[in-house]
Image 1 (spheres, helix red, strand yellow):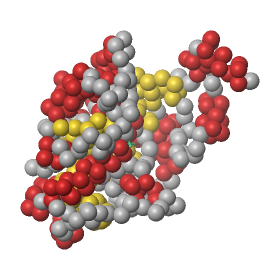
Image 2 (cartoon, protein in one colour):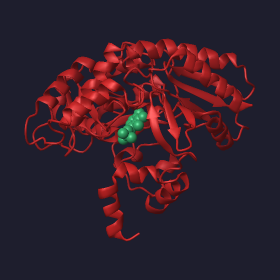
Image 3 (cartoon, protein in one colour):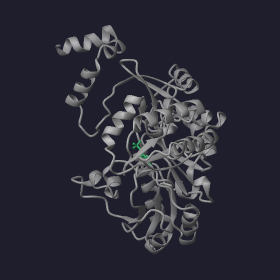
Length: 418
Ligand SMILES: *Cc1c(COP(=O)(O)O)cnc(C)c1O
C-alpha cells in the first residue's frame, strides 16, 4: 500500500474499520516490525473489553486478572467514567498549565479529600509521579531540613518497583532493568524491604526521605510483617525524614482499603498515585502530600504539558467518585478474602503459596513448573494473568468482580494447573 493510500484509507474508511480488518497474525507482525521489543506480550490480541472480561478477535472470552496492572479497578469501560469523559469532550480536553481551569481546581480538591493530603501535583504516568516526589523530597531536604547542596539521600527498598525512567531504574535491584542503562543518578541508598533496624541504621543527617511501596507488587506481592509500616512512620517522624509511599499499584482499593498504608498508623508525607486514578481510560498520575512539603515547589520548578489537563481531571474525578460511591475498597477486601480462601482450598500440589491483600493476590507456583507453559494454559482456560517476579502469578482483577466470577476463575485455575 502506498503512503497516500494508507492515510486515505484511514481518513475515508475510518480508523475503527481499518483496525477491525487486522488479523491476529497481522497485529503481531506489525507490532514487532514497527515497535521496539521492550515487552513480551502473551500470544493473544484483545479487540474488545467489557467489565471484568476481555475478548480476542475469535470472540474467545478471558477474565482479566491482570486488570491492566491494577489500572482497571472499576471494570473495563465503566459507564459512569466513560460518560464523564464523553461529556467533557464537548467542552475542552487539553489546555495548558499556562491558564486556570475549573476541571483542575475540582480535581485537586477531590484528590485532597480522597487521599487525605493537603496538595497535589498532577502528572501523567506513575514514573513521573515518583520523579516528582523525588524532586520535592530533595528540595525539602535542602530548603527545610538544611541538607548541604547535592548531598540529599533517599532510602529505597531492595526489590522495589517505581517505574522505568533512568533515575528510577538506577535504584532498582533488578539487573534486567538496569543493565546497559547507566550511568545512574546518585543519592539513593538501598535497604532490605521489611527490616526496620537496617532502615534505622541507614538514616543519617543527609537523609531526605524514605521511598517504598507498602506492599511490593512487582516483586511478587510481598507483604511486610505487621507493624513495619507504622514503625517506618515513627522512625521517619523521629528522624525528621519524609515518608513517601508509592501507592501507584496498591492504592485505590486494590488491597482492601483505599490505600495500603491504612492497614497501620502510617500516614505518609507524600503519596504517589497513578494507574487506577485514570479510571481505566487514560493516563493520569499525581503526587499528593502534606502542605509543608508540597509548598517547596515554586513556578518553574516542575511541569508537564499534559499534566492536569481537563479531560484527565474529569476522568480522575469520576474514578474517585466511583471508588467512593461503589465502596470498591471494601468490596476488594471482602472478595479478596474469598478469592484467597478458594485458591487455598484447591490444595493443588503445584501451588507453593497464595498470598495477598484485598484483590492483589499472588499465586506462587512450585519452582519446577514451567511458568511460560502455565501462562499459556491459563490463556487456554480463559484467564489473563502474567508472572510477577519469582514464579508468582498476579491475580488483580477489576474490583467490581463478584463471587460467581471468582468461582469461575478458580475453576479455570484448576483446569490450567491440570
Ligand atoms: C506501575 C508502577 C509504577 C510506574 O507507573 P507507570 O505509569 O508505568 O510509569 C510505579 N510504581 C509502582 C508501585 C507501580 O506499580
